[in-house]
Image (cartoon, rainbow, N blue to C red; front, side, top):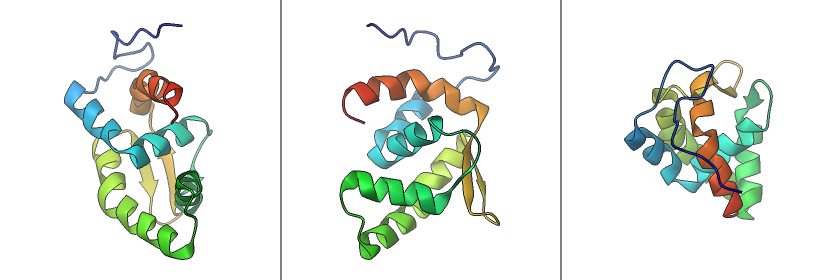
Length: 117
């Protein structure tokens, strides 16, 4: 099955992401997995649950590793995803949620999932 990625602006979104932004967002495996995981969910997900899923996926769900992922995700990945307007973070509730613009990344996440995302 061939996936057409030539149209980066699917119906229902009036916004596009520059190709450099798309590549930057998908550069890191933890961001790719977070975006993929959130694409499978409806509504907000606790950041703690997302971090636990990332740690499980990496096969290192020790408390120490979870703490390191949490710090890394907060200071590196979360900010990039928010700035690109593909993720919403509610600090009070401790939740993250995909925004409409994240749908622009779905064709690329589908390709990445074929390669073992």
